[in-house]
Image (cartoon, rainbow, N blue to C red):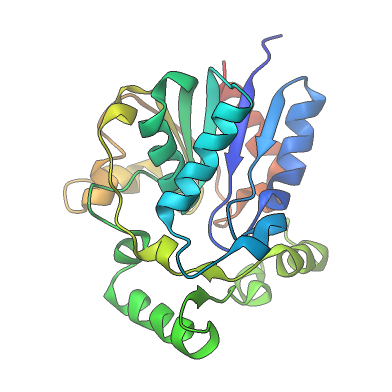
Length: 246
C-alpha cells in the first residue's frame, strides 16, 4: 500500500481538531497526517493579533512543510483554507504533489475571501467585527442553526464545533491573494459538497472564481453534504483523500 503524506488546513474559525475523524482514519491506514492549527486558531488561539492576516497563515503552512521536511504532500484546504494552501504551494511547489480543494477553489489574483462572499455579506461581517469582535475579529457562526437538519451532524458534533471554534482575525479575510503562478503547475482535486460539477461548469464563464476551477489539471469528486464534510461525512472524505493521493 502506498503511504501518503497529508497536510490538512481548516477554514474560518476552526483548528486542527475539526479534521480529527478524517485524520484518524488516514493514520489508521498507515498514512502520515499533519492537521494544522493556523495562527489564532485552535490551540494557537492565544497568538491572534489585529495584524494576523492571510500571509501569516500561508507562512504557518510553509513552516510545517519545511520544519518536517515534507515532500510529495497532498495539501488539503477547506473553504478559506484553500487560499492558504494555494499560497503555500505557490511558495514551495516542489514539496507538494497535489492540491485538494474541499468545497472551495483557488481565488484569482487580487481577490480576497471577503470579496468572494459579495458586498452584502462583507458589510454584514464588518458590522459583526465592529460590534462583537473588538474591531478585528469575526465571531464564529451559530453552528446549531447551520447544522439543523444536516444528516450526520448531531448535538455532539455541534457541541464540538462550538467548543473548537474561535473568532477569526478579520485581516485574513480582507487581505487579497498574491501569487506568482508557481502553484498552477500542480495537479488539483476538487471535492464538491454544496455545489455540483455541472454548476461549476455553468458558472465558470460568468464568475472568475469558478473559472479557476475548470482551467489546469483538475479531477473532481462530488460528496453531497453541507460545507463541513469532515464532520458530516468523515469516512467518505477520508476515502476521497486517500484516492487523491494515489
